[in-house]
Length: 315
Image 1: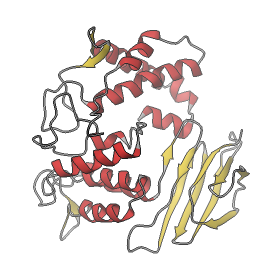
Image 2: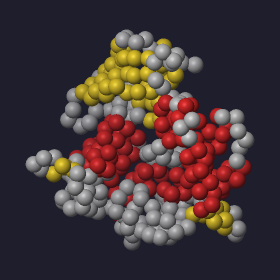
Image 3: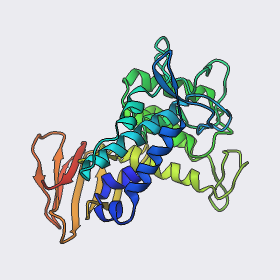
Image 4: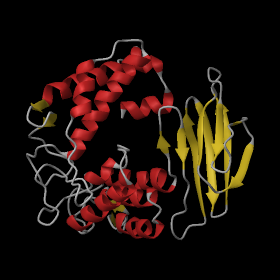
């Protein structure tokens, strides 16, 4: 979360005076104290954890846990470099040697060491989270296999509401809008009549007014169909329409002290920079059809055919 906030804002004041950097560094210290070195395999392992999938505990080498630990360790050193501090070589060494379970035969990520895709059942999205929000780099075939395998191990009726939004995000990234549309319908089965209250499970069981499920739905719209992704130097969009809709609008997107609106149809998109903080140099945009950055002007409506694009702070 701190990493995404930093990518979105580059808020130096919060990082330094608000101690956000200290949170990242202290968390990296925690992970470095939590690993166990396997001398025989020359890898670091994290033992005895509960992953996002609450059906399994304790497990060793949760692929989600180990992946997010690696992200934290790397980000901690990135911040040290940003603020002119020496690299922590212990963190780098652990990150480089942290065991990430992968089945080379089936080309997928086992949820944890010893997981069986034929016997084990999963409660909710777990390995599917590697693609988003963790954005772990992997082959498209591996991601497709992860999504396919874990959909079959997750019961439809009892999967918490946030589950299928993450799966549809993955299929949208892989270009399968038909499968994503199917999962979008599945993701809103947790909305209960007559007051449209979200329940944890689609049959109405579990927690009610389930905010986590609402969050999963919002993420499927923003980061799924909006295709929003945050990187260290830019923010990317890959806009797609939800099946059965004709237009989607996002208003008040805040990025690096600037605000913009995006709306798009099946054929075109409109992008408008609505405000720029006086301390910001503003934003520039580059569309897929071009390899040129274009400065954005407050109030100017930029109209293009619908396509992916990225924005960044003016260099």
